Length: 259
Image (cartoon, rainbow, N blue to C red; front, side, top):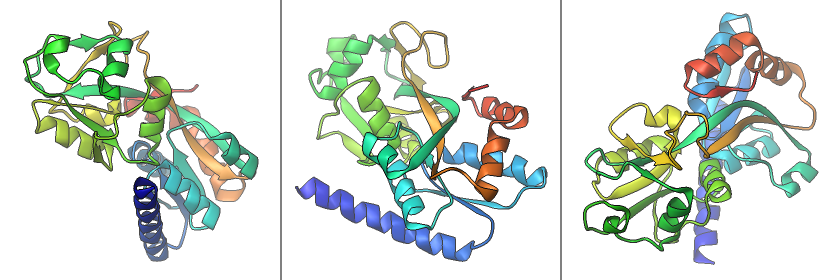
């Protein structure tokens, strides 16, 4: 109950910040949502603007908060890094996949562990494996780093891997996870590959495959979401994102194009 209240406070705090941000940028197209998607949306916005489209403002507040912003009318598109729930689909939200993102597993560069099986990763984040020595690393307690409730990255990890131990440390952005892992030799966290490539962390093989290689199992859809059929500037931006020019920018950000 306490965790649910805490998430509700965080969600409305983020929405209040979004309202303030949108008040300052009241023209053009407003996109809010996943911090994993925000860098890609910004790159797409540059290309869209250069091609004659409207100005696009972005806010990285998390997938669920982005949907709330769309629902409340303070965003025109939500950036979502998880599948819509059946309830959200019934409400009228429509998701358009613009890229596939790789969810990387990162450890400190000094950690000698090179890879995990998917089953080991599941046990690790469930709290069943608590010492790095159980995985061939140095003796010492594992420090789990996770995203906050409502994060698309967190939901994607739960869908692809399994449950997350309730005592895992929480960070609110992919960049914060990268920084936390970079500063802690005992840490392990999950984050978007495009953010992990900024450096300072070591990426693990999962089932023998590095992130981005064929056969790597942790891949998730990245979508732009409308409430009802897309129209106007939102429809035009979606068309650009899925065009050859937009998909070239997707690939340039280290993500997998859908076309």
